[in-house]
Length: 210
Image (cartoon, rainbow, N blue to C red):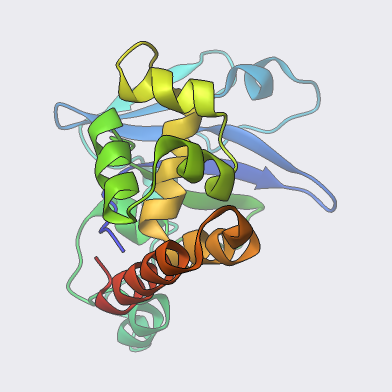
């Protein structure tokens, strides 16, 4: 599994039966920037993210983490702080605001939820490398992983950006178990020896975490 880089925080408002996308917190040249989602900003009966985020404007900037978001992160002076970190799988010495918000600050006393926003940098070269590592042709790869072969060919030849394909590829690369499930389900499209080799490759990939 690849190590995914957190580049921001997605913020949601969780209601009883729905979850609304409130906006995104990012860091641009060292400056914190929060931007309300277009649909949320224009919706009726919504609430601001915090007192420093009035619904009279869409975007906000700060030299440091906004106070109401800072409040979501438990104090390091709290005796239970190391345990909070352990339960969320992070180092108690972690200082990255995005990581802290999307882990130990993910769900606080309010209805706002915080989720990590990961860097998306898949390229056509990643697709070709992955396909070839499994020993599959474009036709076989398309059948097994349920892609459109014409779209796959166009992406590999640089004729299209193939954003949707690359998003799905990101899942296959980061979660080998998902790729393995599809390989098992759709393995009938491959000759036995090729199927076995691809299965073993994904199993090893899952064990090594790379």
